[in-house]
Image (cartoon, rainbow, N blue to C red; front, side, top):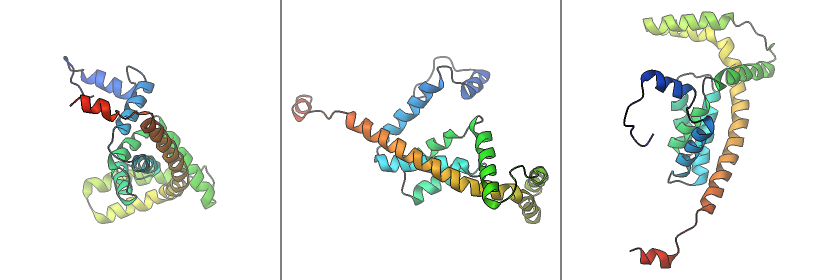
Length: 196
């Protein structure tokens, strides 16, 4: 929020608002759009940043998605702030759908059955947790090796699905921003001179 409340919200109320906004998701989405529209950049740059953020949430690199979105935005010359806004499309509601769809699509492309044995994931996740506490490079390599049967199809599925959805997001956001900017009327010179 841009303005401070008279009485701060309790922690429980803040958590509830984060999971389910008080005023609706529609209002939250409009707020994010207006924030994007006010960025001093071209519609192309903003849309490219949003697309980079959306692409990043499809990758299986959990915890690094905001960093990946920023790097992609810099490489593609998109807006970095818009890339961070784009990562908010990943949330507790969308992540399970994203994970299942990227894993299934990647498994299809690799020729593996989509109902692959996920015991690798459980053992790899446990090994990763232990390796992070120990800090040993060998244990981290073992953990990644255990997670690879799950991460490989997810990464391939993320390239395809994330790329397709990012392209749609780019076109949609760019068009919206161009329409919004063309709807803004410039102040006539005569009126502007009288305001001085």
